[in-house]
Length: 123
Length: 198
Image 1 (cartoon, helix red, strand yellow):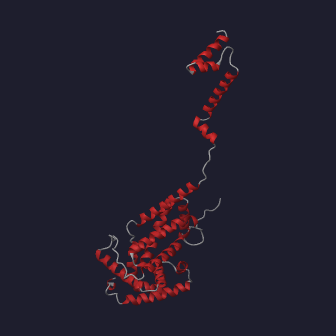
Image 2 (tube, rainbow over the protein chains, first blue to last red):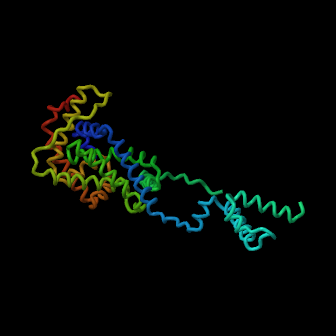
Image 3 (cartoon, rainbow over the protein chains, first blue to last red):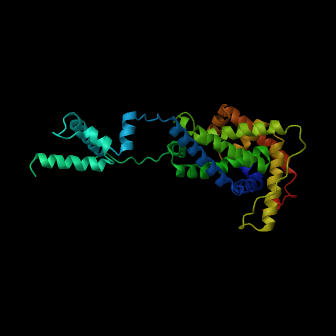
């Protein structure tokens, strides 16, 4: 018989009683430890998010996005080009600046312009 | 075809793997580690402090420290449970220093009893456990730690040597002296505590 066996034989009831008491965990301890674990993981995630490099969006891309993206920007550019072309080389007999100044609305300008073009083409 | 690896990972390797999984965000790994390590941390703290409320706080604090160091854990450097035992031991020593000068140990309310035990058995358990605690409290710190790790936590001497950072021979010496003292202290209380009935 080893010294440990002898000790266990002599003090067995005390050791066994203490083991049973040790095995009774306080109520809620496991839940609190798991809650701590969740909180530590949440802190790591928050730190990782804060440490991630911010994505810098160029100003032109922000403007493009505000306008509605590439299709809208393309239409806008086409309209601007048409306006410049009409302003630089207006059809004969059409004074766009005069119409803009004298007309009450853009619709009137458009209507007059359409009539002028149709007349030039013999309609 | 390569032959399947039939070797099973040791519990210590499994604990290190679980800790790495926890560090990677796996909360289920925390649940398994909690189930494995909390009873050991609480049991050791209870026997070193003799105070259930303090042991509860110490076990929780040790586990929080484990969670926080998980990303820095280096596999192969130590066993996770050994690390927990060391932290619990240090926290208990801190507790003892803080308590030094105060009168007596606090007597804590017992936890909800195990329904499988009769009320008489529970009372006898409480009396015996209290008697053992009284005897343990009379041992020097290192003898008490060695006895608790050996006889209440069932650690082999080499593991105790790791936890206490001493040689196996020193562990054997500490436990031998501690056992002699405990046996002597409890010898006169066998009849009083119903030993003869067992």
